Length: 366
Length: 263
Ligand SMILES: Nc1ncnc2c1ncn2[C@@H]1O[C@H](COP(=O)(O)OP(=O)(O)OP(=O)(O)O)[C@@H](O)[C@H]1O
Ligand SMILES: [Mg+2]
Image 1 (spheres, rainbow over the protein chains, first blue to last red):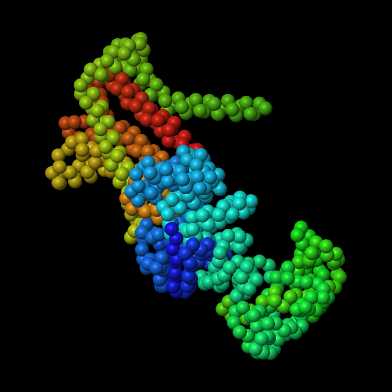
Image 2: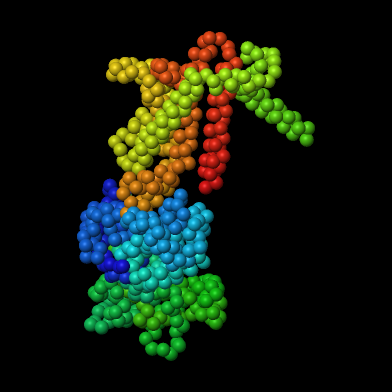
């Protein structure tokens, strides 16, 4: 079973503190949504409001078209998988997974069978008679997933389910989680502060910061075409280069920066149309730098820069560069393994115009 | 080297003295319960189980033993139940003046049994409630409730909150959460509270003496035996009581504390 979720203007305040600030979000049925953001940005708060553990101070929640704002958790078509798994320590895995069914009045034989089926889904059928303390972290996480799915929720809410696992297991569980979600078709709302995890599993990522939604979109969209400076910086390493819009015409805009003047298409302005005189910030990912003079068109040159340091990362060299036009700026660029550049050497920086994103510069409140 | 030997010898001597001090009276009691003769005083005349036979034949003693058992069992059950409910309420809900309420619940621990007994006696008189085993039980609930509350409350950690939430999320009502999740999770401390409460009630004299009339508990019966002079029978029944307490403590040690230590 699956259902769409709609959050309208949800605000949550704790005393004077605003944990969630006018958040609106529409989730389609069967979607895998990831709420991504730094610690304390309100992810758990939003999830708790969806699950019914908190009531929003303002705003409305509906699930599957039904008003849910003040409905108790037990009566919502949602189940939550908690950050600490919250398994019942005194029950066998089978009874843990069957608990929700028991609460729904299902007879013992039937619920045991169903519970075994869900344990099978997460690969733990053989451990059905064990107690939670006999399991590893990853196994507990699977049991929590099976328990939450056993009651056939329309929406599954997952609060950093992979947070306690080591990196390797985490990557493996991500794939499993994604596969299971495809299989059962339930809407998943998954919280994390790991952007790699978010990109690996999400259909759409919701980037949050300080109680607000900064950006929503498919992983590639958010990474390549971020709509806020925060979102650009949170999704991965990025160079911010300050500039000013000098001139605007119907298809492009001219921007003056310390690295020279460049002309970019209007589509580079992801957060709204530019206007002349606007203070903007150019966002360029380190892997988007190219060597100038490779012959391809649309390459924008950014002047020459001096290499001040580099480190080998296996797939690339990560280089620090000091542009000649702006010696106080430090640029990070990735160069191919084959590049042989030594410290102090000058290189000419260039990027594809299509790779550059231009965002309004931070105002006072951001 | 020599110093180490000295230290370890000293600590052994110390330990022997301490345990001797604690257990010698008990050992003497048990020894003279097997005294062959009329007086439970040295010298030890020889081994006999006649006093145990006499104890088991004494209908009044046996009735008192049963009374003690019933009072201990029921008063401890009630104290645990009330203690658990109070702990649950104070740990999981915002109550007005919760610090004050916690203090009030634990306060009786600091009041002497004599004061509690006298107070209860006055209250019972005022309400015209006749003294009986039930009033002794009430007295024992009063002294054991603070203990049960303190033990259970201290084991209700925040890490249980999400587990209870999960149960509620899966459709459990508040009562079901308490019965199926909270109580079983806290079972080690609930049982510890229960057994401690049983041993306290089993031994208790002052309240049992002042709040009972015709049916009395074992300590009161032993006391009335002692009034008619030293009697090896008292040693025998004393040893029995001691053995029951030890058995309960052993049970505690080997079942509960083992388990909680592990998890
Ligand atoms: N019950 C509460 N009372 C007061 N403040 C709260 C409460 N719950 C959360 N907050 C505050 O709201 C903010 C958001 O909390 P939330 O738990 O949603 O963060 P989060 O994004 O889940 O962070 P993390 O990644 O660390 O889990 C935090 O600054 C937190 O201090
Ligand atoms: Mg959180």
